[in-house]
Image (cartoon, rainbow, N blue to C red):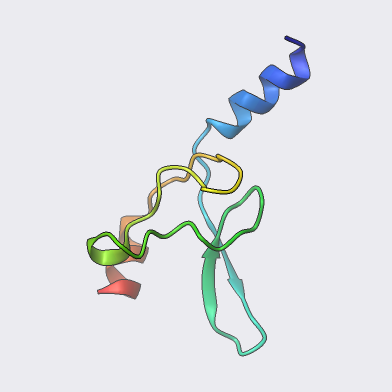
Length: 73
């Protein structure tokens, strides 16, 4: 394995906070910090908790409990 590949794996397994973005109608949503996909909240769990990893790119997602409680209860 080369150094770049190992560096990418280490970076992907380091917890990163989701990014809050605004859409055209000024609504906010949380997206993956690596691939910018918005499917990082699991709608099937109680209180719509974060996935541990982004289902698209595998980035480890840091949990922000105050965002979940304030926005999704």
